[in-house]
Image 1 (cartoon, rainbow, N blue to C red):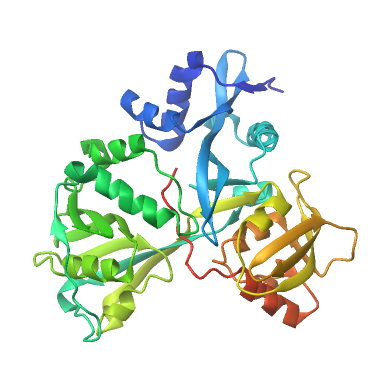
Image 2: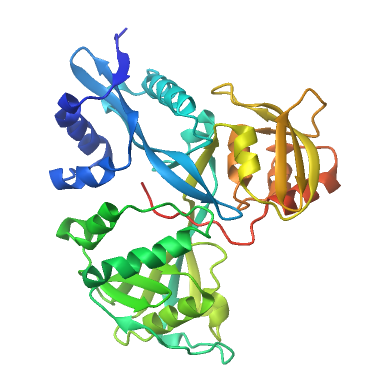
Length: 397
């Protein structure tokens, strides 16, 4: 049996960490790419697993700010850069790292931990549930025309994005403060994005950009048998900005398709006279949540209906579950531990999935992930947990 241990990462580990990251993520990040994320590094937030002098596993969490339903902004531990050497798979390395990392997250009193997953089958056993959905759309540009009811307010300009950094940052910040899933984005991450390095283009052009007073779209063009505009970043604070940006994108004469990853409630199809010109080509999870402090997290968000119930939350990874009385009036929740009999039983990863309202309580009950004998109570819970503003991942990390 190999002997390995978990400890805090140090600066002396950087070369080995870079090598492990390149092996597991199949790409070397140039040295200049590391500092931007360092501004979000949490104290004692990086751990490694060592076997002798070798690093065979690593994980970290970032100190982030997350918007939840009702426009409240919470501190969140953003788990990132999780890797286990291919020589040490299925030996308990990941569980050992996660046990230590989440103990540190709990000591730091984060109510929620979050991650974006490269693989979907790993993190449920650690209490993470997919909380936002990313839908890939493809628009047949030449056949797309706007419905006559959609106003043409204009206001969009062609710009060099690097020359409008402050305006882009302001638009994003306004958007993320009112959007569940929105994440604070430090200026150094904007600098990294706008640096527009050749290695980041994945065969596409340099950035093209449309700018509106309340929105922006950054896209690249890929040349092949047909030309495709791939929108990599689009943010609209208002419906008018959203419609205006799409009018500009649909006006790209030489482009056959416009592709974008967006959210399921994106109203794009309703802007067009023929909704069939918008095709869904993919749908995947985006942001995953693990509730670290159930009462604090449930009290922090707002709700759409009154609710009175007792939740039994099972946690197979840590001891953050339990039985909680949830009382909601006029959108505001009280939540406390209780010994009263539970009305609803669910695992802590399911609580993460319903936290933003992107997944239906009743549908999860039909899949035997939520258990309750009172169908009316389930419907009421489903309504309460919905969000007026659809949840969207701010950015991958």
